Length: 179
Image (tube, rainbow, N blue to C red; front, side, top):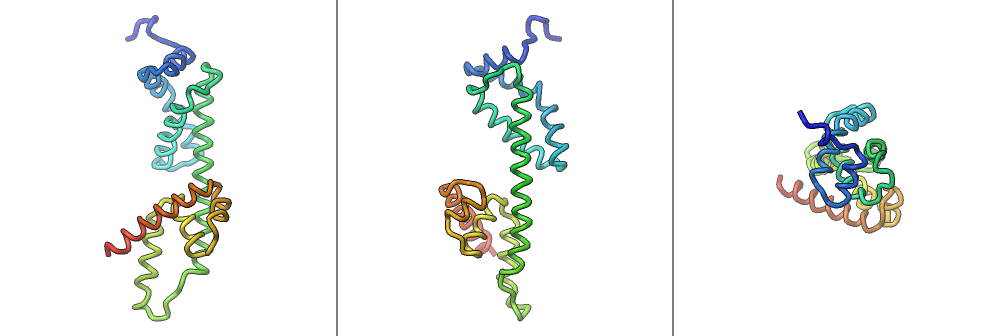
């Protein structure tokens, strides 16, 4: 059991963490992770999505800690970050679902079942990519959108869209050539 003097409020821990005390941030994490995870679970429902959003939220909080104006409001602040992450993830999933529907209309179909191999391989490889990489790649390489259009449709900068397309291209090449 900790002595009463060792129990610090959030504002004190935030102030210490803002000065670079990693143990203080770890204490904030331990104090609030279950609460934030519960909030995320109500929005995302799947444990793997919750874990991912939770890690990103606390990483974002750690990076943004110097900008936190109300140290006593740490819990609400980190929860807002997490919920924003959850909404971004859900929006990406909706875009991915729309893209899969659109892809079904434009992806080449093979008349001969033996010719379906490359089409099926591409679809399989695309399904294994994270939507943040697959969506820009399909918009660019299959739908023929420009980088600026892809960036706008995905809600990212053109340089991020380019980077995601390049990563998707590399991953697809590895997966398709490993067969």
